[in-house]
Image 1 (tube, helix red, strand yellow):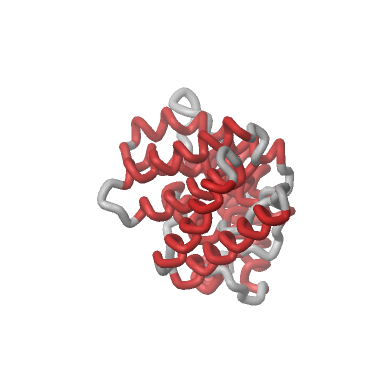
Image 2: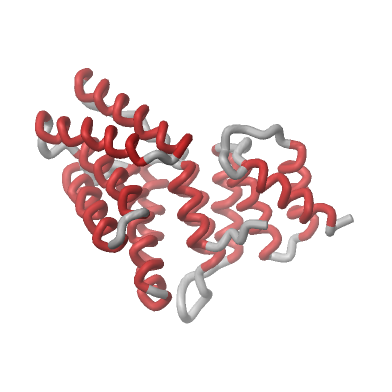
Length: 249
């Protein structure tokens, strides 16, 4: 069974969250951005770094042709985020990625993808530096996720990640952990994308943490009945749900 703690959840988001909110730009820029996104999505299938580099090459060319474009630079940050994961100096790589996302927010303060990836990068840097730094970084993570949702109410992964924050963060006085808020956000993630195994499992965790066994069991039954999709962890989550459900009977 997978242990679905906060650090694991961030990695799941990185593997699964490859979609983007609609781009508003000139036709030629939009076409190139869509091409970059298409190449990037191939990385999600087989995790070959060549697709990251190919996507980044397109973005570097766009950055020269369309300097100071927020849509270009947040995507550059996203690519550098993934490149950093397998690098010798993760923090240096993530800080580089973060600088691109910060630039995007300076150019387009209301870009939801930039706020989302800023939250992810803050979390990863904090996790890598240690537990004390992680605690200090929880609040800015939450703020960027809340802003993501405020701008784009259908941003499912933002609901999922903030639910995990409230679920796994320590409670007062150390931090803002809140099991009831975690449940509220987990429900909203499922409301936006009900066929996601990942989000359904997050909802099960939220109910289970509140010791609401009746609703937790219902979610497990939903997961078990769902047909497998293209989520990489769908088979494992379904297996975990079957095992957890068996303990109720």
